[in-house]
Image (cartoon, rainbow, N blue to C red; front, side, top):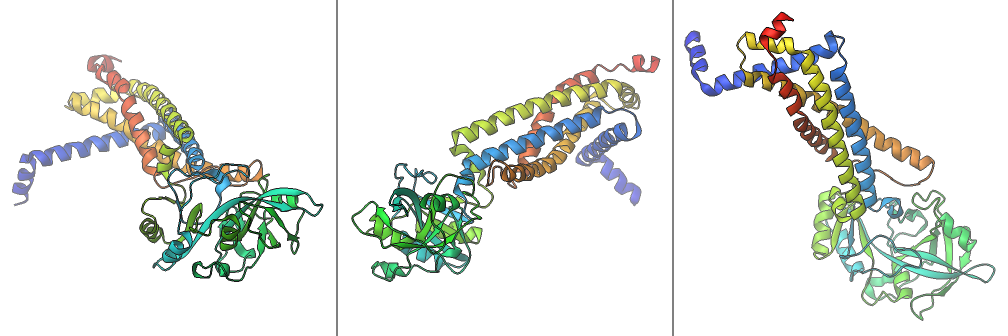
Length: 427
């Protein structure tokens, strides 16, 4: 009975092919393992190391490009998604030109907050505003209007802890509710206005003739992540008060809407509220943003080209040398009846496996390198995220290594095909 089953399996072409490939892969892996562990040869280890370092460098550069495309440290907030009008950019400079805005922001943000899985949603309005200083002068500060809640949030690099929760002045769209008149300053804004906790500052001019009551500094956020070492003077105020002062209350205008909550829920709610706007996820950066930023895309593309070239060159060289040194093993395989296609498959599989091993090691080094870059940059020249990691980096690195291995394959295959049994036996 067992003999009949064995004969049936042997007569099955698919089973024969599967059994043959299992043997080829087994021989390839065993050959690859034996060379660095049981002989003095360092060529395989050199190939794996070079691939690992190249992949690690590729991921680090791509992480920097992703952070660049995502807006970099100048747009630091802890929201899970951002809704912005088509064609809008990041926060403009203090003297910059006004960017496109979205309407009905207060009403639609309230609708988003009512959805399941949403923790909070706040429109964000940015207005360059002149303040009177203590010596009678005038200084410009970038006012950022937000709707705070009971939780601590980060908007434009500043904590909302210094603002009372809610936005009472909005009053369901009538804009006649009580004002809080609170102001949270970044260190640069505090220096420019020469203000500290409890000080009052008067707005000297804005976009309309509406007068804004004096604002009281409720907090100077010394831990402001995005602007701690920046010359950009930023201040947080309640949204409706800034809308009234700037003339944006008529259409409830805002530059963007920030959403906190479950990733799927935020994307769904944001898309339903603003179907024609751009919804960007802030969870670790969106790789698709690379295609929207020319500099970031060029940087990542050049890194990809260089990475594939270096990997393919070193793998071809080292694996070719390894095959040349291992001609006797190939001659033995030919002697015992392994056809040329089988011997070529052994060499090809060994090359791909070695490259993928280097890629796996390179992924670990690359992620560690991204964390190291952020740590070093944060301690020296920057105060935000300068490089981002993303789960898509794993298949990306493996695909790059696989392409490099395929490009490197012809050279070791050529050497293997020229192996002569009689010459190797004589040697």
